[in-house]
Image 1 (cartoon, rainbow, N blue to C red):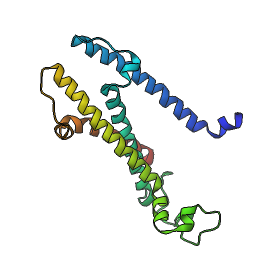
Image 2 (image 1 turned 30 degrees about the vertical axis):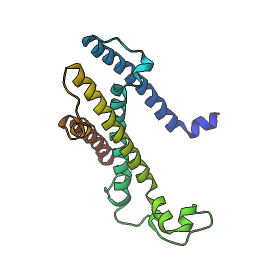
Image 3 (image 1 turned 45 degrees about the vertical axis):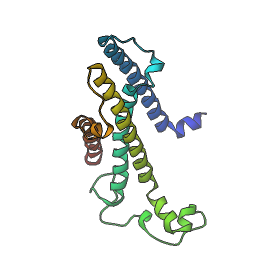
Image 4 (image 1 turned 90 degrees about the vertical axis):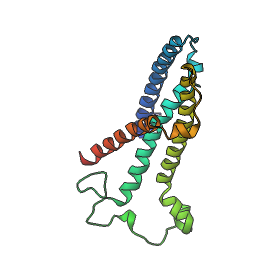
Length: 193
């Protein structure tokens, strides 16, 4: 157990902080949601019921979307762009061993030995995984945000809005881009500091 904790300390610490802040987000969001319910004369909901609301799902997906966009871009950009002096970048002056092509050894992963499409997918698998996570989070943000917007519109006596109107609204893109810009600022600070 001690070795497991030592060997996985970084991911365990990050997971613990993630869970702590996600629980904090849920509790604070639940209180905000119930305050909004009271303003509109609706009954409060339990914490468990809140976790299934568009209010919670939209906020969570909006944040995850920006994180996965950040990581997808970061992984892809660091594969072919350089930043002299940064530990996050390969050297622009010399080839790295990882970039050298050669015959696959018997201990190489299957896609490397196979070549072709399998190798291409393997080479870009981390970027592709983050891109798919981004697209999934983006879709959840859009769908739950649309539901939440229509709930708010109904509370104010307005007609529901079609999904395309919500996704093309400045509100939706404001929510997305306020997170996206901060993610790229954070990565920029890692690269240049």
